[in-house]
Amino acid sequence: MKIVFWERGDIHFINAIRVFAALVCAPLAADVELWHPIDISFTTTATFANPFQDVSLDATFTGPGNTVLKVPGFYDGGNTWKVRFAPTKVGNWTYVTSSPDAKLGNVSGSVTCIANTQANVHGRISVDAANPHHFRYEDGTPYFLLGGEIDWLALIDISDATLVKAKRIIDMYAAAGFTQILMNGYAWDTAWKPGKSGPDDYGPPDMFAWAGSNGTPDHSKLNAAYWDHYDKVIDYMFQKGMVAYIFCKVYNKSVNWPAKGSKDDELYFSNLAARYQAYPNIVWSFSKESYNEPDHAYIHKMMDLITAKDAYKRLRTTHDDLGRGADYAADPAMNTNLDFRTDQQQANVYATAIGQRNQKNWPIYNAELAYEIGNDGGKTYSSVQSKEEVLKTVYEVLMAGAYPAYYYTYHAWDVVKTTEVPNGLKFYGFLSGFFNKTRWYDLAPDETLLGTKGGNHCLAKAGSEYLVYLSNGGSTTLNIAGAKGTLKGTWMNAYTGAEQAAGPFPSGSANLTAPWSNAPSLLWIDDGSSTHVNPGIRGGTAQGPVAGVSGPYRLAFYSLQGKAAGSLQSDSPEPLSLAGKSNFHPGVYFVRVTDAAGISRPLVKVSVPE
Image 1 (cartoon, helix red, strand yellow):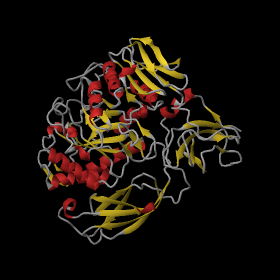
Image 2: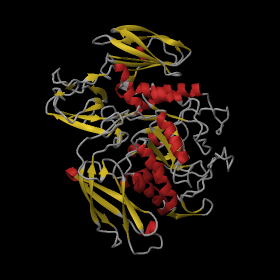
Image 3: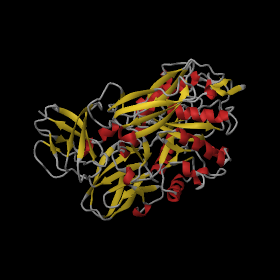
Image 4: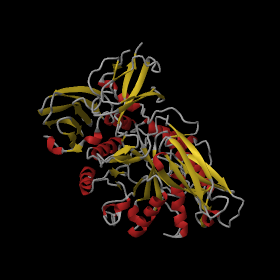
């Protein structure tokens, strides 16, 4: 049996369809997959004046390797409380509940975790220890953050359990390469489009997050129907591999919030943590535009509350704003409970991101950088820019080694035209597809390598990989120093997605001229290591050790649809043979190498002929 590798030019297909997977092993039982949330329900015959406040419920889960997770429960209406749990390791888990109520407390049970089979699920996102300006999933896959702001996402289908509108817009952004949506935990209305300005205006929403109304709220009780609906939206995002960046609070959307730091306020934050921490696609953000909250001690207290309640330790941040009041994220006495910095900057975005990278070794996210004008030339918010201007600002952020978010005027706030595809949305499919061919997480901004700057930027790992951005096409020079061999390159037109081969590039000064005039252009130059990951398979002939692996490794095979197709284990870095292994039928597969330390390499597409 012989394995045939696709050429490098086809590797982008892997990223385009976003096929990724985690562990492959034989199912232990038909129960719950790795990292997938399940609800465990508990009932009592007792009655309470206020079940949201008068009784608590926790469950302590013990799993493989003596892993212990203490997960808070939540009241879900009637006589029902739930604990939402997602196993973090394959194997058997047991649990026991704790509650002052006799029927809810001291209840035990078990859950069997089997392997994850969903290609969009990779486990928890954390800051990459090896590249702390970037993120990585639990299964080792790098996380490329490309955000889109749809604040009202959970509010547009509030009376429709089928989520027709929410699913449509989530699908739209996922297909364009976005990996995250910024959304409100709750919001009421916008000052720039107050009331019901038209059929696509969803502020004020048709359902309140608490008992009562926004005018006369009862913050001591939550509206279970609202949160059940929110559950459905989060779950669909999970299925699509889309991260939910949740603004716990928002200060300029006319919400009548509970008193700061009160028992009712803690109920709201605790409810968010209890209901959504089990989902691996969650980011906690204290607030949108948290400069509106001058009390840093209060921010710190509520983020600490989230942290204490969250057994899974999802990423934490707050949407701050450098230059508008006190800067929580820049305060070393306070920002210890943040994992990365979120900011909003519309000017000097490159220089600002570089400065923020130098301040602290964590990821930088410019989550509000420009606002794309409507397809009809209209706007909802007062500020709008052309799709080209927005795209160029996005690239300024990316080329600083930071991450961007995209705004479309008819999607971002309470006016949401869910059937309208923004004219500029296609640009981001080109962008994400191109970046995901590179090792962007290993590259650092270095403009000193360029001869002509003025809007041109460079990300580099000297001697092996470079990503050059020319904001208006044109020419520059690049200093390629220390290359061990001749490098090859690929140009991309950021407006059309057209690609063109470039090079070869030997070590030394290279003259670069974009193939297109007056269009932002990217040039990726590398030594082949970014996509030439040898998965160590040959048709019975050893051809050297697996690239980048110094010890035992595991090979996981997936169909083109991302379904698990089998696995092989090696006790040494030498290649494995598929010869004689009848469980691998002829066909096309994706293969991932995971080394003994649990670090996974990018997927490689292979063909197994007859």
